[in-house]
Length: 79
Length: 256
Image 1 (cartoon, rainbow over the protein chains, first blue to last red):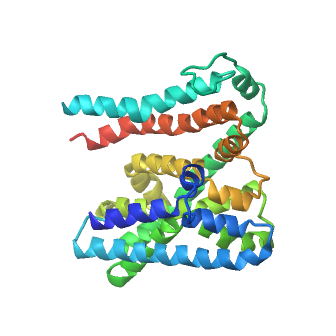
Image 2: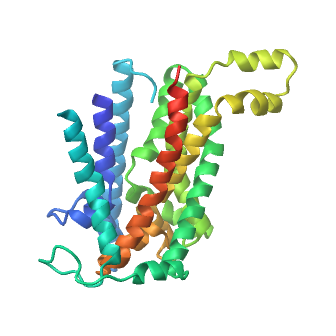
């Protein structure tokens, strides 16, 4: 259950389309905030976008580690 | 009771949204609080059949998804096999490396790839978008083939080699026939991964490469609900066809 939760959580956290269309929240979801800063006309926001990109990568790496650790620890079948 | 709940779920979760999309794609004027459209039109479907931008986006999406599915499998088969044959920490690193591009948010992947693609002259081109789609697709398909080759009995190949078969003959006459159903499913998965890809297409395509998922988004943002619904219905059809086609194969594979 744990590895599946980690995988599902990171997929949802990284999903752009549903967040952009259905969730005009404040603060913005990570993918939407990243895209808005990355594609903004003001190039000064590009640095913020790369910080958010790195944050997304770190979260993904943590999810991968959690997935692989959980799969091995519980001796689950291979994905 | 459970059957009724499943039926209610199917109606609420599948049939009702499809019916609303269908009604929307044929609606002329449809404003709140009217429960049904006040007038009906075939405008968006006519535009699709007359070879407009929707038809072009459909063709581009089908072509890109097909290439991604096939090329993704060609790359992922040796990778998955290599991970399946490795042991210890190499296996863990291999699985993690294959899973990372799948888990990474597509926006982050696109931002990372965009600069390299601009330098290589691939940004804003169909080839570039296919290459970008291949990144998560190869990761996903590598994990898939890792599972396939973990369960694969390599003694069959060893036997063929001991009888004098060349490596190519072993692959074509022994391995490929055994994994053909899994290969077909993998091509379908690769197709679907590219088919639904939005963020990577948007960033790498730079608005030049038009796919169906981009068109749905653009029509929605522009308030063109009729065209958005038509494009969304088109977006749903291939996954349903792929699932329908793969189900009999899966049932045959599960049969004792």
